[in-house]
Structures are given as C-alpha cells and as structure tokens.
Length: 369
Image (cartoon, rainbow, N blue to C red; front, side, top):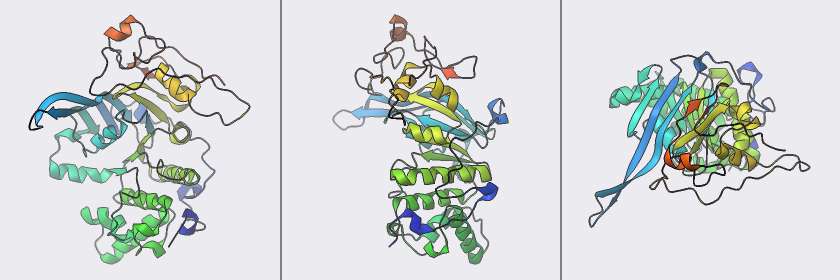
C-alpha cells in the first residue's frame, strides 16, 4: 500500500513551461495577469444576482413552508480565462453553494449564469450535460469524492466515456496514463483502488478526473483543506502549473487565507450569503476596505515571530441565514456600524481602484504589522 505522496513518483514529469507537479518553489505568488476579460463585457464566466433560498418546512406533516434559509443572496462576479478568483469567508456563508450552482449541481432560486455568452439556466438536461464538459469541479474530501468500487483507471476515464472522447480502449488507456502523469502519478497506479492511496494522491486523482474532458473552468471547492499541511503546497502548485499550461480558470473556494494569497489573482469575500468586497489579491491584503475583510486578515498569523499584528475580535456570532438582520447583514458585529447600517442594505459598488465593496463607510484599513 502506498503510504505517502512522495511514493507516487519520486520525480514527476515536467509540465509545459518548465512547471513541476510536485513541491514546486516557482510560485511564491502568482503574478496578477492583465486578462482582457477583466474589462471585457463578455468574460468567460459571468454571474449576476445569483440567489439560493432553501425552504424551511414544518407543521404536523413537515411539508408546510414556514420560512426561508437564505444560503446565497444576490451574488455577482466575473471570471476571465486563465484567472483564479478566490471565494473566501467563514464556514456556512454560502461559498460551496455558490460553486455548486455554477455547475447547476444545485439549481438557483434566481439570477443568471452566463458561460461563454450562453445562459446556463436556460439549458435543458441534454444541453447542460454537453456544456458541463467545459465546466468541472474538484470536491473538498478526496476520501468521499472517489468511488471505492472503481479503479483509478475507471475513475479518471469516466468523463472520457460519458463524452465519448476516445474511439478505442487503447486510446482510452493512453489518455488516462497521460492525465495521471500530468498530476504526478503514473501507469503503475491504474489498477489500484482509492483506499491504496494517501489523501494527497487521492486529490491528484480527482484533479486528473476533472481535467479529463478538457474543461475551461474548474470549481475547486476547498481542494486542500482535508490534506496535511505538508501536502497542501504540492497540490496548490500543481493547480497553478495546470492553469499555466491549459489556461484554465478557477473559482477557488477556501477559508485558508494563506493558500488564497498564494494562488489567487482576485479575491471575493463572502459574509452571510453576500459578497462584501472584491479586489485584486495584493490590493485586498495590503489595504482591505470592508471591516469584515479587515477582521479576517487580522486573524492570519504573521510569519515573523518578531512582528505583532493587531487582532480584531468581532462581537457575537454569525447570524443564522434563516434570520438575517435588517439592513447590512454585518451590522450586528461591525465595529463602525451606525444607524444607516441597520436600516439600509449597502449595494456592492465599484470604487476608483477597481475594487467592489458593500459598505456605507468604505475606506482603506491598512493591516498593521
């Protein structure tokens, strides 16, 4: 049985552009690319006012609607080709639900999702299935997302079979081997089952499966949170190498801000089902404008033990999405809230530096060392 990631392949094959799938040190920080899609009215993926409300049922038979759980409430963002947009926030804020709605694994209550100019919400079952070839997902838990009854060869080849991408069994096998080598595995792993691999190797298999149909965008739903710290950087570097080679766009969902700073080009901060700030990575980490973003970043440990960072402790707990506060959702915990915050919900508006923020009192909050 293989017991660690290094046993997968001592020196994985190089990717195009000089990248490596394992332990790469080439990515201290990804450069913020000047994608044309940022200013383009037709980016690769365009989301507008995306909403998901789950009914709360009760009554004697448990079928009468007695309320709504507002999991996602009017989320809007764009993703350009080859760009990584990180979606961050506390657990339960609606990040994963947003990601699942992009692929219509969960159907939204309202809003629009346009991929390459086409409206995904208008597609029927067959058309949606064809469209999903270009949109894939990597789930959080590699122990639950891979079938224990299938071999690695069958797991990775399943998208090839669904979309009939290989004419012969020999071509199918060669394509699977190629995909495994892309993620740092090899042909020796074809006939093994998921239980024979470590967590990091399982997530590599999940990445290979997501790559199989040739996607243009991948929803990475906390892809490294279930892995050991020593393995996380390897998987993150692998995702960056694949992005460089194939131009894949990522919606990278995470609550680990250190990982987000390593991989993201832009960051969207989510609180209680809504986006409160969207900005380029460096701009957001250097001077967050929203008080919730500032509180999140103040909790990130400083790598230098000689440096002290002022920690912002928010009062109270996150309200229930079944009973959202009036006005600004953040006002019960906000240290600068005023009367207008309790009465009027601030829209997500753009500032002069390209940042978007939902706050009545938007101003920069430099993070103190």
